[in-house]
Length: 267
Image (cartoon, rainbow, N blue to C red; front, side, top):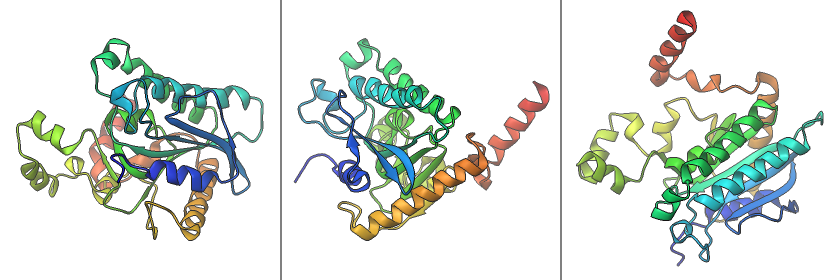
């Protein structure tokens, strides 16, 4: 059994189908140009590369190569489509366990690499590209910030293996000087501390959640259902615009909405 997740790779292969692979990127990035329905799209996934020259990024983590590679894959679309009426959608398939933690990563500026990726996604969104994040596995820490979090719409598959958080449970326990069990008890009453999709959805950050039959190896029916949801998300972006205001409607974001209101009034 593999020591790393294959969800991102399997969903990339299933959704991209006959799409044209994009070359010249790290082996840990899968990128292809195809279609979602009638909409041209670029599919992007970070996958495990056991031979990655950076050992901390061999299990699907987003490291130096991945950060700069994501930035290039997205920026190339912005430049190529800048004068087109129909701009490609960007489908970020998310299954990332964390950013790459290592001394070399810190010394060589992983913060800049991941910031470059996030910046490219944000600029694509503001340039009129529909950016859709599809969560099929873990969406953790800086890896999710770099790959997926800047999406206009976030879609999550309903499965215990789909989790969103700032850090893994073991790491969070060490930082807070608590046991994993104590953290799980707190998470039951404090949604931002939880890892499950329902808690994350209560924060208003998800546009849709979908149940599928086989999340590890999607069936044709799974692919059809997800593709239809992606099509609807792209249409929703075209109708409502490129900002992220849709994320602030949930009850658990009331304080965030109030802060933004006061900032607008004062500034």
